[in-house]
Image (cartoon, rainbow, N blue to C red; front, side, top):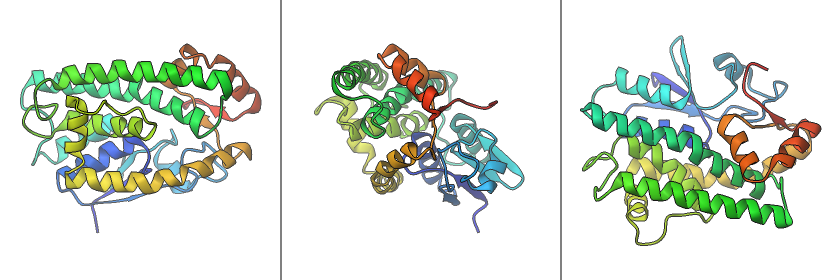
Length: 265
């Protein structure tokens, strides 16, 4: 029986980071998507998952009596507890660079991908508004991908000649953009990096899980309409929605009670 248990979701980029890291370090683990995960609805959520994370968010790592939320904290814990096959750079400069890259992906980049989901999957906007917001997203993704390309430089991986911490943190977000046809341009260093990473067994496993999981995401639209799902408009997601022209979407969601915010409620 594996020592570690991971509450996750195949489409969550934050969960994908953890599965990538564990597989790169050859650490056995078990994982499961909690019933009602992402809904914020305590009446349908798996009570064990609720007990393990008061934020009601994936990923959550369970190691004995220890329950850890937040993907960055989980990655740091994994690196600290399992120092063999380290993903972090050996020097302070490399570690700081990786942390900055992770922060951009977890905040600004994730919010854009999430916003695309609000439009494409959950139909929060249509017509001219939807097109304007998607055009804003395309421009923003181009900016972030240009910044990531500069961080990659001429190296094979973000950490240099070895697949490491920053690669684990970037790939899920570039992959999610790609699913919305916002992929890096063909022939660019970032696109070559993305395709090169997909050849790794750890990334291939995560990609296959994502490909299966994303097919079931469309059903979430019905759950939203039935009042069983509240989408979490936390921090950078809320900022993206407002700055990209969706303030009326936020107000409508509040009126319909199908958006939520982070704990404490």
